Length: 211
Length: 195
Image (cartoon, rainbow over all chains, first blue to last red; front, side):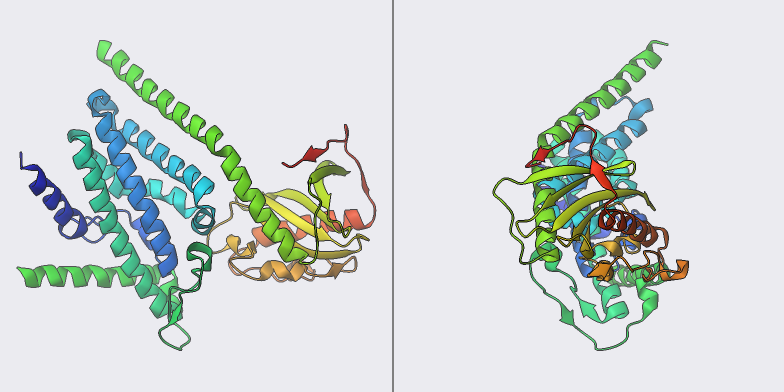
């Protein structure tokens, strides 16, 4: 059992880079590819995913004593779906604009396998504080990969960055990076896969160089 | 056997707990959510009729059009603001807000209050996502309320047919019904204030 600070640092390294849910574990592709068509959507959903991951991990860790092995999967699904619903309701009540921008994407978070993967492999065996931190780190790891992909696809498909931020952030932060027609491919699912593939290759190259 | 019973009991307990907590959250947050929806509806009212003012107490009244009961309110200038919904959306119910001139002969505009349509495709009926809904600005009874591909006057949306068709159809039915005076009082004349 590692000392507490080491555990936190280890989880941070794992979640943000070494075992990144999107780029290393390659989980959660459904929401990842669906919402990464522009930067603001990616940011919104990234933030929501972090909240859900922390909440779900906390719930699983907190009730781990009562989760018998044979019912663990249904219980995980129940807690995660409950967490997403709770986040949706809270957003509708306190962050209405964000809720409207994300729309049905918020419900998509339930399909993010990274969440149930963390519940199964970590949260159900750990005290709440470690599980919460792990949720935060994995969530942030997913979020930054999502954001990167979102910005990349937006630049390639539309030539802008941070277009349409009024609804979420109150004012227009858009930047016209290129004045050009835009490559439609990257606004579509096929382009999402291609762009994601390149990000994976880039990450592997960097990891390879480090060795 | 005892294991089976214990597992089932535990799982049921989890389910019950989650249902209870979510229900509590839902009921507790309902006023806030309702308030947000109302604030947005008011914003739409200002977009549709920028120069209109409303009385201190907002009373919504009810009219009957065919089978449907529609809520409406009137501004101090006499314009009508009608709420209706269609169930023919791609993914269910679409709630609409129509603005009619005081003489009911002109459709001032439409806004979508709530929907569950596909993000990126059907959700373009929202004003914040595209200007498609502005096609309803300043229309009169001579307008053919159907998509161009169905022989009418309205453009569709790329990648979505069912959604715009449902909206156009519903707007047409309500506007034309209202303009032609086909409305009548609701069964027990429901008056809702400040809801």
